[in-house]
Length: 311
Image (tube, rainbow, N blue to C red; front, side, top):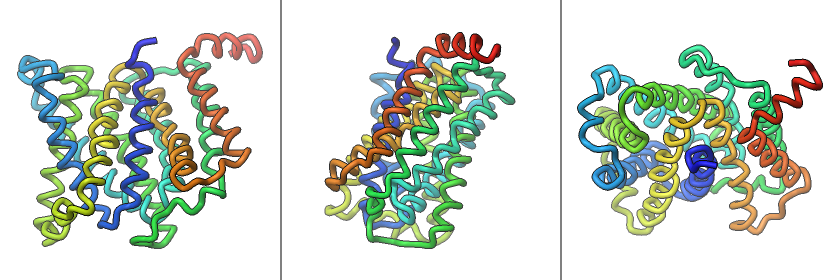
């Protein structure tokens, strides 16, 4: 099995780690988003000469490609990630990640209508099994105390922001795939999207008079080390791996792999907060893992469905 086919799972583990660390930071959501984008964007730019595809791909990219990427960065990262950060502050990372399970079906629809990606019956079954498993995982009430005690808000606001985040992130990743199909590679796309989000965030903060307060986390030596680690793991590696996955497989498959983030989050919370994993959550983890395994070998599942239901 090639690395690219399971890069989405690695991205999910990175995002779970980053989400847990970000949820423990006492800083405004928009400030956290801008800070992590600056850190990750710097690391991505530094990586381009060593791991990028070279100058030629930049010259081959069209104005249309960059337009899609700019929109992707604004919608998927600047808006989507800010909404996600505020959602995890209100709901806690475990509950906020419930809403990320909306991303695979939205991505499947975008892939079907926009990119003409058709899923096999076995892949549809695997996606359904995985999402059911994830739903069982996030129902583990023993892990309900994973929310930090800072910057609380109304639960309904957290739910709305989580839905907005899922829709924005699905749209952003779809726009990225369009560009990767024509010119730039995963690292280049990651750098442009993050760079766009940095510029957009700075302009928005400056126009609203909040730039100074948003940059404070970068100057706090008690917060910056955690911000750097969370940004490096959750954003730098996470976004790069996610684009590798989206470039290699369909949007629905890639985002289903990335939706395993709650499974990794439960394991992290259980270890970090010394919480027991309930039997229902453990069953959900096993079911989600089985679903991902089916996703990696859909032909067998498709044949079984054909035999049983005549699909």
